[in-house]
Length: 217
Ligand code: SF4
Image (cartoon, rainbow, N blue to C red):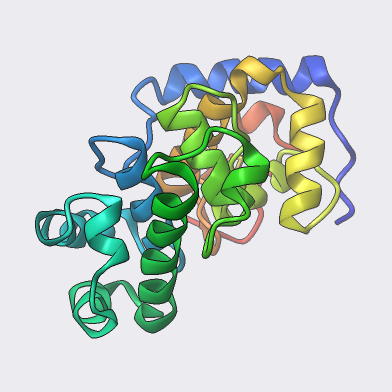
């Protein structure tokens, strides 16, 4: 990535502008507790939040807690989550994760990154979603939108999710990590899309080193 790295002050002013432009940016996955958010986030891999939100009410009605999902039949879970894609691996992760919670944490979701990423099917992105949105512990979620826009804005100079997370965590104050990810995701969905950026309508067009990237809407 050839983009010049932007200063902290510049990035914070840009983030201020984005936060003002997307005041309602929030976690779009429906959930009532940390376990439901953990399960929904595992399901959201390679799937839209809208689709996940169609599946989880049925899933949680059938399996309302970690114990019931830990004891579920694999085929039953596969059928319920089939429309989210990669359903065989996801079903194994949901059951395995719930079993680990029951066996190691009395059915509770742990609140430490190291414990979360040790659960089946849970990587740093999922762990950061849970930390930031279920436990109010700052988490820098790096998904495809966050990675793309952080690169376009010159906030990061690497491409791996781990590298992007590390650079963003150094660039932005900890207390802003969770909301920064929400804002970047909203911006990525509504304006700065992968193939078609809408630069003429962008609230940070004057602060972006890659204005005009890709096809323009
Ligand atoms: S100016 Fe264009 S490329 Fe830059 S952040 Fe805005 S929409 Fe994305």
